[in-house]
Image 1 (cartoon, helix red, strand yellow):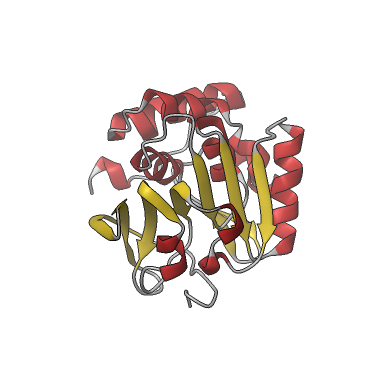
Image 2 (cartoon, helix red, strand yellow; image 1 turned 90 degrees about the vertical axis):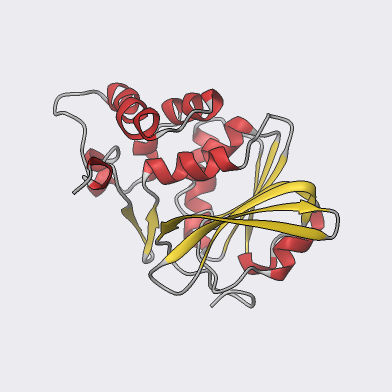
Length: 224
């Protein structure tokens, strides 16, 4: 089986800081994440803060982990890869659908001007908001609601990242994307999807299907 699919854990005895550096070297740089700002953010955000205490020793495992409420924190490579596809420069307003643990949110917050994040499960949204406040990340705005509807009050967005899978492209999210904006989202049936990047050009939307992924479903009016 190719090395890419071997789920490795950091060597024993490393501090969390050392594990982050190991993650960047072995899980991100080795597998072609090239954006230096993304790599810096992934090396700075303490992933161990976003997983349950029972999973903390596995925080830098090369795979997804449960966070409660039948939800997961994505594999580090997937977080970095999806973030890189947004091509953030630092002055963007970003919409995230599916706050989850708040880890992806924190990475986006380090790379953009403002992040608006929507989560349907109140307990997860509240937990993520608490962790980000403790980390003194103050450019994130939280909403509990149907993520498939987006957050129209603050549209348009320069970038939209969807961390849960819909059977087809949610129309409200396309409408909330700015001209020239990028959206990255998993599209497909439950259990197996394609990662899709959409670029808006006026009233047209260019779609590019990328790697296979597996995300929890987007529950809502324009999801499942």
